[in-house]
Figure (cartoon, rainbow, N blue to C red):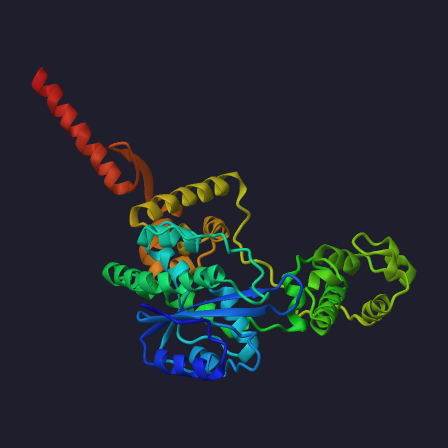
Length: 408
């Protein structure tokens, strides 16, 4: 594979993207800094196909990243491969208002062909290629220039290894017939709604302090205000104030600015500074949350109770058994709250639809309805049909009776 020098000019980037646009797929990774800013600062982009790889410096003077961004978002003929790519996709969305299309994430794919819940990149490389990744440059400051040869080598390695691993994962998905299982998961990753920052929706990320409309109205107003302040200053929202502090103020709003100095999580400066004045105005103007906006209660059946909790535990056991039997990550099949809902009588659930129903949901429903039970066979815990178990017991009883008669 040809490894290019660090790309720092628009001309070199355009030439690279023109060649990569003819590929069936490209592997992509980014290095960024976000500790001190609201918007993640893109510091390096690594990209490769099966023949060549390069690192692109978006901080190079005068470079125009448009050729690369167009390849990511406006070329449907090239599949974009990431590993745990949520933050990479977020950066591309922030720059373009679009997400890479089409997209494939090897961390998600590994869940369909192994029991790995969230396999790290280094572990995946070692598993598939037997290569130990040098993690020495992992926590480097990618915004500092010049980049060292070690940093660039480390960064490019992320996409060169991925370009070798992806065809192997794809081959296994084809052989196992599980590729279709991942369509919905990849669609979620590429959904622009996951990356759109709407101050009006910011309150939904904060743990709600109860269901009081007035409190939630203040929470919505304060969260939107904080988002705007953080965006304007380009600092992390937590630098304005932490979620816990914001929720506390929504629940117990101060009557005057001087009271802000008594709020846990705020400094005394809030008693008379401008940001404190702005926040107090937001609190004063906040309207109770409308019925339409009130958070929906989680869909649940009857309260579980002791017996229902036992059924939920059996469902979790069944999940472990099935995940082991077919070598799949349990998390890809379902989650604990969904199993508890099933035990409580809810039936409109993802595990009772599509491939999940075929692989796990039907048996889970049979277990809830008493049609199956657990048994130990040859030292292994298995699930068996209750009717079959009864037939086996009857057959064993008949055989023993026959033996007894013969002995007489």
